[in-house]
Length: 239
Ligand code: FPP
Image (cartoon, rainbow, N blue to C red; front, side, top):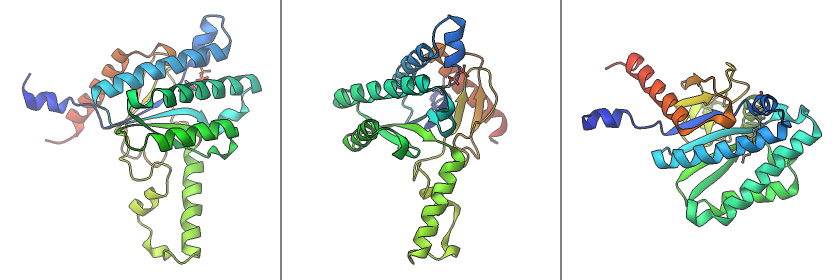
């Protein structure tokens, strides 16, 4: 393969994933839903490692939405426990993995213990370059309202005049701040909805919907999604 062709097949800089299908995966096996989330957390570890091998710069995952509080107390507690365990592990292996953590969402509703883990993970990993963004108590509309409020507060404080607002300035108020938008958003599990995920940032993203359930998601599925992304870019991307 010519070098230029290989370069064309480089992975997108930023991949975002809606980790969907954990509940169905568990049901198919007669297991509790929390077992599906545990397998989903394993799939996340697998895919985050693979993204690092591929040289993906940003990986954003939907771990808990503003709507997910409606689930049973047991299920919510199970997901929170998995997140706590993962972050404790990540803090332990920080130097080895060199992953930079960011959290998108209103963390104030999480337990103080989990908030502290998020804070520590973010602050202790600032230097590292592969960036994982966890969307936690996240909703795309909520993010936009939060950003609009913060800008309005700056206008009230005299920092900006309303006319100063541009798309780029507004984007800087979002949880994602200055990072590039995702070129590719993957939703496994066969559902074809955006579910309030990265509403602003997905304006130009390619969506790839796949029929695999998230706990079964393997590096080959990521390869397939990236190949589909390149096929579309070749078709629509001009010369
Ligand atoms: C959607 O599947 C998934 C969630 C609401 C939770 C995602 C959480 C994890 C993968 C674990 C988080 C921990 C780490 C370390 C990443 P669903 O339950 O809606 O599945 P269903 O549609 O089949 O019911």
